[in-house]
Length: 317
Image (cartoon, rainbow, N blue to C red):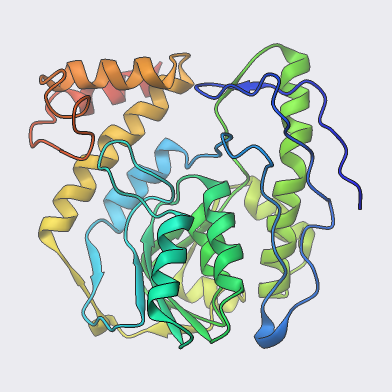
């Protein structure tokens, strides 16, 4: 299928797309299942400056239900995804396709276990990670510990076997971007996003054997599935034993702190600020401008006072 150029693209907040070479991806997004029940590659934008994010309320849900959940067992064939998908400005971490590819190369041609507890993040980075995992020659077992939301749920679908905790969640929704412009820009953005949403519908439907229209409605509704629901709906194969997971108190506290500021940043950008301005404002509110985030983004301090109240105020307006 020949890709057609996208008409003048919208400018998502904090992302310059004007004059880019972004092209509309093919609509037949998921190919026939490959060996071992794998599926074909999902489309990603030609211009990877574009990001589709996890919504702020998903960070709240992760904080409440899944922060700090970790595995009791680790092996030399395990890749952990206990962070947001994509690079994280605030922690210096994040799960990226580059890191996953390097880990797969280091492990070599042997069965892989992917442990996930993530609220998602950059949907297109998640799709790229899915595409990398589907090329691995050996079986992949995905274990959802806590949550696999948004982009993380796409990654989970790369598993030949998917296991999920009874108290864990899998969440699916449509691509969510931060955009600005007039009504024409918004229509173009909606048209540009539609093939990516359809590709995810096709993937979820092929994995779960559920009707595609039902999947699309669940994505429209931003649907959370518990472990037992995910299995009954075909999104997972088996429950993880409860004693295979633990709550890491130190990791929980760190997850909660980071989630607050991640959600705050997206809320400020949604309110019209650029991402650069939002980060500068949050650094100033935190009380250490230039000391932690501006000079060393990976250095997270302990005092986050004032952020929770501001976030509540923004969301109530």
